[in-house]
Image (cartoon, rainbow, N blue to C red; front, side, top):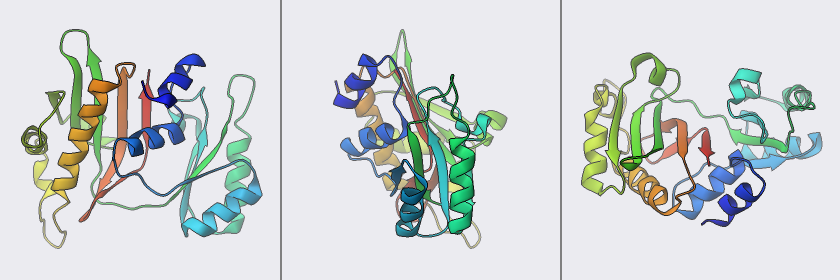
Length: 223
């Protein structure tokens, strides 16, 4: 069992977002640059070092869906906006909501959003999912499923299985996304799912596929 999962289980909670990123990194999965801060000064320094604009999100063991409580602030462009965002996010803390810090990422734009996940089925074991991301996963339910562990060939088949698979290819002036790195991501997630049996559910959404690599913009792991 990974030490981060063991720690979270001992504290009777799910993984925090920075822990999700560390877990992914330990399995060779590409993670975005980020910093976790605990005061306004640290937030300003982190935003400057990451480069404008940035995204700021609360880190809380009590909040799984951060957007529902306005715990995500996008496109923060200067020092004043960092200060305002830090105050707004910090104000969310209450008796029923502990805030362990604020995580800051570079703000990334993308025309295509995808999702990668895992659900642990009582009969089939870990099932890997791939589909459109963001709000579109709930609108179109365009999702491919495969039982872990995956080979590269099986992962590539998942990319081709969704109805919207053409958006991953060259389209007008947009270059094809890095299908090789997405296939490797699916394989590594499947390997993690097989080994880390305490993970009941994983959701990396949205992921921005790029011409080279990908950008995981949000992730949660349920134990």
